[in-house]
Amino acid sequence: MLKDITLGQYFPIDSFLHRLDPRTKILIFILDIVAIFMAQTVESYVVLILFTFLVMLISKVPVKMYFKGLKPILYIIVFTALLNLFLTQGEDLPIFGYSVGITVEGAIVAAKMATRLVLLIIGSSALTYTTSPMALTDGIEKLLKPLSKIGFPTHELAMMMSIAIKFIPTLIEETDKIIKAQQARGASFDTGSIFKRAKALIPMLVPLFISAFRRADELAIAMESRCYTGGDGRTRLKEIKFTHKDLAATICFLMFFACVIFLDFIF
Amino acid sequence: MLKAENLLYSYDNGVKKVDTVLDNLNLNIKKGEFVAVLGHNGCGKSTLAKHFNGLLLPLGGDVYVQGINTKDEEMLWTIRRQVGMVFQNPDNQIVANVVEEDVAFAPENLGIPSAEIRKRVDDALKTVDMYRYRKHAPHLLSGGQKQRVAIAGAIAMRPECIVMDEPTAMLDPMGRAEVMETILKLKAQENMTVVLITHYMDEAAMADRVVVMDDGHIVVDDTPRNVFSQVELLKSLGLDVPQVTELAYSLNKEGFDVNYDVLTVTECADAIMDYVRSIKSGN
Ligand SMILES: Nc1ncnc2c1ncn2[C@@H]1O[C@H](COP(=O)(O)OP(=O)(O)OP(=O)(O)O)[C@@H](O)[C@H]1O
Ligand SMILES: [Mg+2]
Image (cartoon, rainbow over all chains, first blue to last red; front, side, top):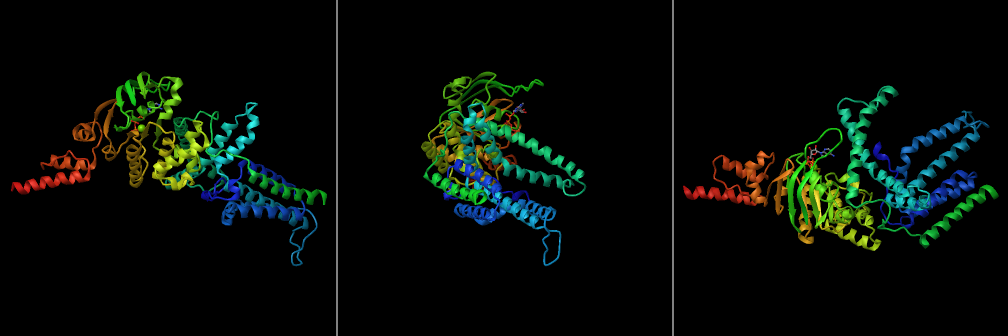
């Protein structure tokens, strides 16, 4: 199950989206979230779904990968949809003539929430599949740059994020190993009361933390050996640049964004 | 190139007084040399390695890198750039999520322009024969491949010398062979000075010079052939000899007059053949 987590994984191919400036992609993603939560009418949802399809298409990432990204939160989507479906007050919506406790309002809210969640996850997957974590954190660092004038540690924050992402697979693998080692000694993680299960996590978390600290120590030594002295005077292999491609992408997105606003507020 | 003079060091963790880890150690490594460092666990090999790029500073004596004293704070980054380091666990020294971005880490830190970084990264990856994998995620590579990426990350600084602390300890035989091949290639093609700390005698046998440490100082310093022929001494220091030497030595001990001054399988086979022939002709 742990291996299913695809969030934060880069899909190294070449596409229009891959070549965009990470800053463009981050800003578009943020505005996309705003649009998703603003959208009220069916028409604006159609526009957003179209936009998401377009993104999936030009990212050249196999659709299978997007489904994989959705899998871990499928239960959450289904669960919230069911809650909305049955718990919203309103006009009764009979199914085949029988009243089953579903309301018209409930059905609408459930559909909206499910669509929103799916669009959000696909949007964030599209961002992380097409942007290497290094580029992503570079983008965030550049976007937050103005804050460093008031002493905000932008470079350090970006570095920490990229290292954290880098170590996700390593730590997942390690967690798997520790779980197996403890199970081999008779520990059980999936039976008993919640309290018992929580307690069973301790022999798993302690070795994980100790090993993470040891790794951190070794990594710091390795980074220092490779002349790391912080953000000052650092250059990049791929300097991020805002090109005409980014301009085109931004204009294209803003058109979709304008459509949503138009359909929701003016129409 | 690398020189340690009367080097003295002990870890002081503030709680209790610790024994001296390096005790009056003298070592001089010349440009282009491939030196293997041997010694039992805890004899101070890693501590010595960390002195060669100023990660640790001597408590007594001096360490020089290309004539620069590591105590000279202003020259610290010049020294670090000249001495590439590779450590045991590849997972804990790879910084980025894409191979080429990791190899670029050191040149980026040095403030080199993008175009030049690109060139260095490509060159380094080609040298370790990992160019094909430049866009891959490091955690999906094999141990030997990861360690080669770590080596590429060090040589992208264009160092004069590379110090490796048990780079093969966590690898399978195939990964070990890959790393050893890379080391020999670096030495042959780039005339790189290599210091290899290892527990594998077969690897040490490939070096130009073998240094054996015990209790913080150097006890033997000679060519692999001269070192490994002193089987009793090495055993008394808690070390082994290469398997083929061991075989020839055991035969010799059992009364078969086999020459145990051998380092490779071919040499060992020849020595045994010579012995068999000598019996035949003797009869
Ligand atoms: N950070 C530290 N703090 C305190 N003592 C340490 C530290 N690192 C090493 N030591 C001690 O210093 C001695 C030498 O350690 P070192 O790591 O140099 O040995 P080594 O020859 O590399 O051993 P190995 O073959 O196991 O890698 C050991 O007794 C060890 O316990
Ligand atoms: Mg060591």
